[in-house]
Length: 173
Image (cartoon, rainbow, N blue to C red; front, side, top):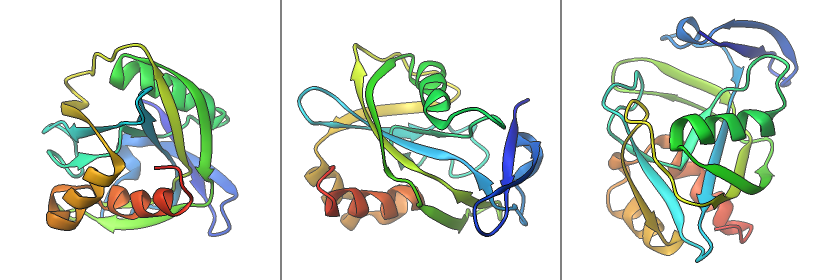
């Protein structure tokens, strides 16, 4: 089981904890990332979280998320998770929202409390998502995704509901 990096309120590292122990009703602030994957036609990949996920099982979300290992450069973690979760390789990885931070509590009472830099990337070829991570996936336009978020916000992860408007505001989606 991987460790995650624990953070002080200012975002500086203060230690680490096993990933399976960090998420609880009192989750400490820790480092994560989100990645929004685009194809060559400008469509975004959205994924539906596996029903086996501890938090927000079965909801639609961005392409994938993850936690860098302590000391691991985030872009390396993005590449590693793209391969293990989506079965694909990325190109043109860019961090567009380096200071994005959120705290949300899911229906089971588990809290997400993350400094979560948001990346965009292009997929290099096809994907073959891991069933333990991804239940379903779809390619959509940012405009259609915004319409779906407005119509049924409960069907989407809280971080996607916050990140998509921020990415659209800077012209990235």
